Image 1 (cartoon, rainbow, N blue to C red):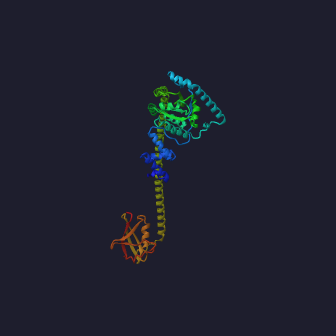
Image 2: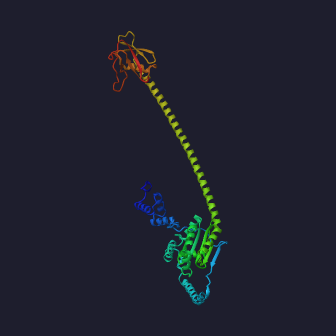
Image 3: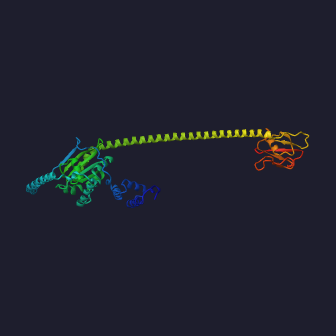
Length: 444
């Protein structure tokens, strides 16, 4: 499993792998996106994927979306009411006249009984509780009765179909199924389930259907106000509103006639979709342009911020460097001051120079690195530290030095230390009455 899926639970991981096996999709990120969009309902996600591959509308398993604004009766709406076919020949006319009284009585009595029944008991179809369930139930019952060779029905509610048609800029064909109407069976078998109707729906429109005996179908029926069955309505986006541009009521057995009428209506209203596409493309272009401008602005802002950051870093580095130089200079001056103070203190500790004719006097000649020769007399009983003090305090001598004799060549330990605060005397160091010593600069 990739690192991006480390935050999934064990159950979600199993669902992800199962969905991938069922659909054959290799992209694990896409599988996860589809499952998240369906709230990890694997059955709905798989069905949605298969419907999409077959060109069928998607299955929605989410709260009912808000129905877009509609124009149910535009001024140029075309309404086709197809009357029943007249009997042909003496036999058909005789059969029609013979059954007419019985049919009239049956229809009249049935309408009266249904009227009084609705007065006593409110119509349960007025309460829409499961619109998607109503649609799916109709599709199952339709296939049980007429078979699966029919145009692809939209697997969703009426509001969802309207929203999808508006978003995809497609025509929406609505079919209201009147279960009790005498022409319903003939229309479904001969017209609706024909191959030409299947091809027309698959390539041109979204096709939504429902029974008017269900709450969802009854709700749509009340909105579209059909007069008879079979009933078809063609809906399209026009002036940013979903508009019912045509109604076809009554039995049409000739599929070619029905498809021709629908194609003519669609051709007359294709301009509204073209205008909507152009408007969307313009909005998309403007949005893309604004996005590009925003990205360019952000890049420019980012570049300016980066320049400012570099300038600030350089300024901080320069300030740190200058502060370091100031600190070093301060430290140098402090050490110099300390050294001068120490020299001043040590000068007072150096004993007076003995007289030339003092029998204990030792004559020391010093050659400094600059070539200057110094001369000073000390008592042989005095410590070598006074020689160190003398050299250290002399302005011609370096501050970091050692005193070296030439024959034999050796370094005199004359600097006082914590471990040896009182170096040996001149006499113990083996220095004669007159000695030539050299100052070695350690920093040279």
